[in-house]
Length: 243
Length: 136
Image (tube, rainbow over all chains, first blue to last red; front, side, top):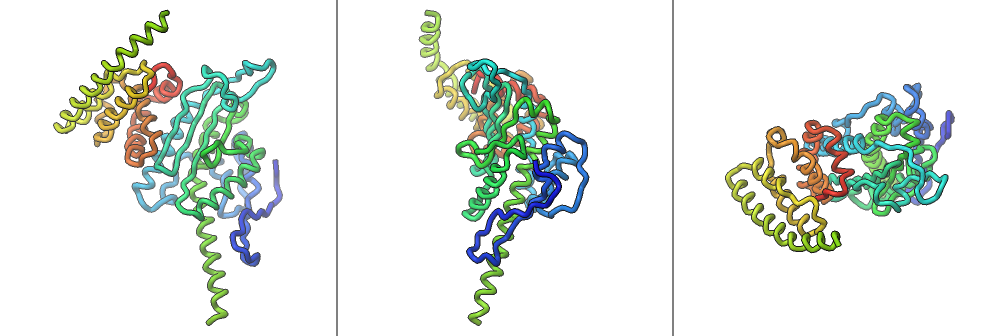
């Protein structure tokens, strides 16, 4: 797990001209999300305005910040309901216990990935907010797999979401509960096993997942905004020579 | 032998179940016309054949329940007047509704889900997840 030092990371440079290639500086504590789940507090330090997840987890804030998501109250209401539904379902579903593998002795595998024994697996729950966004929760006895499909309104958001989530998935080790590859048909997947539940607080894990869902939308909108701003700047500069 | 007999019995019953569902849907239409959405939902939920494995019966029943659910305006009143034995069945149908992905259905189901969870608790959700015998 990375600690301490700043790590500038370029996650996308959509314009061919490298002058305007942007980089998103990720706060190192992004990779320390697991530790706030153990401990009670993480000292806040200078943070980038974009990603301050460990602060969010730190305060244990679980309710959606309605104002920041949308000005439209009905849309904000829907997302609140959607996240509440997911939170309730996760609270009910996250009762995991250790279960050694039935097929191979001395092995202990997350049953959701094996999918061999139907008696171990509960009914999968698909919770859709609308046609574009959905969340699949699969719960066998010793693990839970949460797969999400993020809202992607147009091509640009599609690309941004794919890149951003791929970036996160590649660093799944640091997150501990993230799955390296999303399930087919979804954008990102979490895999929580009984060991995670033993080491970390269950309610904080759920807070993390719900917060993640909330923040992902915000992040992608911000990225889209910055791409459009850069594009406008480039175009202005370029066309100035023709005036 | 017992399994075979069960299977044959199930075959005959399918037709009976589907007729019953059609009968139910007519009753529900009349209740909705009389602006009694709560009674309509109660009618839709009772007598749902949960043990059957036939997809047609389940879909037919789902269509009927869906019609009743979409007509509900007052969620709190509906839940307080519903018998507790129907909470589990309603929760299962809500999850089926949420899986459809259709926006108005999902909105309505999410609204009812929140209120129902407050009333019935997390156990209701867990029963709907873990019950593989009685499915909707």
